[in-house]
Image 1 (cartoon, rainbow, N blue to C red):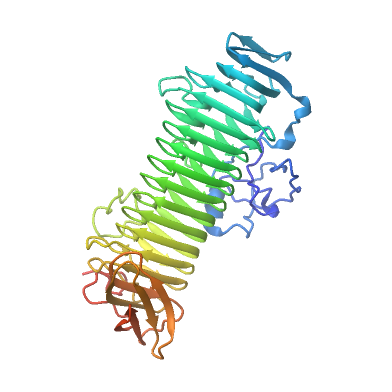
Image 2: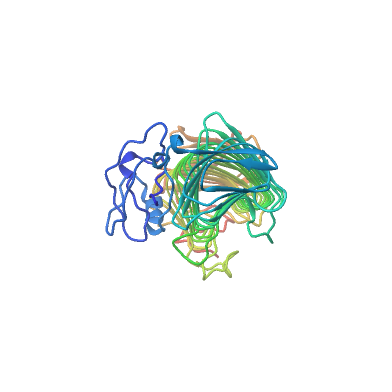
Length: 522
């Protein structure tokens, strides 16, 4: 039975939200119980309005996406569970819906099944395509040397519930050539919940993979995979749990290419610690973070999406990346985000007109970065805050420690940088330094002022009052600052370790790329 995927961290007023391609509205909700993190049920609606409690930056994306599905804990009971006892190279069960053939256990009917013991073999779900199957892992260790250890061949929805206090392990050596290419592989929707522990290891391909929707609601889950750690082809949603992910590919991935309303990743809660050879989060369409604690160390991008990316809550740290955050449409509207990158920190690129990279030149190719709330700290060796199109800031607190090299800038936009609110500081090199547009409603200053890592940067108004102070994290030659405390035309002093430079608000620093005039460059 399908249920709307409503993460626990969202307000209860939103528990009836239907994530459909049409407009949506909040519906009355039951209160989740301690044992049922997602206990509400809703039906498909045709016309609705998005609840105002979801920031618009994320709500707009979520409302346009297809429904996610989940098996709620209140839809089944452990009292109904049939026990499957795993015993080395075989298993036993009295359930009519279970057959054992050597080391292969096959579940052929809907129901709840409790797995306990150790199996050197495979658990297969081959149930009717309208069946709901719940596997309660209660001290289960399943190891397969050929193919998936748990393989869902057919079913409608499947749930893995991690029993309270239990420790479970699933290990496989699956490969891309196998029918199932993950240690836990589901050709169905898959939900993982409960409060127990699960360790998943796959030396050949993915850790946990579903061809439809994958939802992680709870549990202490450790995944070590040769390729992707968690993959939901249609969607991947994490609303709870403590996840430690090590991936030879992407840590969290959704890659449906046939439907523009699918292929999204949504993190609304839980604690995620991800290490990835490719991207930390990789979404074919949208990547959305509305809550949770996320720590990423990636050799590729920290968070990447092809269409749009929104952060409206949570605590995100990208401690290592090539590019920290990348999408064609980037929206920061809440939360705390820290990014460290060897290339661009935040990069809006890749629309169909730009083709990625520099967008074919210095022209505006339509990408957007919009910052309206939240805290964003960037430490980048490439461009810090970068857009092949425009950058618009209406609120929030942004600090950019930009590149030391002259070929990049702390701020870089092809279509102009407009600031009407919030606080922005960009400390970086001088070669490509850019200032906000002269048309920006909020005052700003730009100074050629140099220092090194550990230097104190102070900004004083004409009375000598300090309106801002920062400690540089690397060497720099340029300082750009904007806040409500700055008034165009007034004189300000930028001091670096006591060495003062006088500037006039609204005037770009000499030698910089930004002319402060509608984003025009020489």
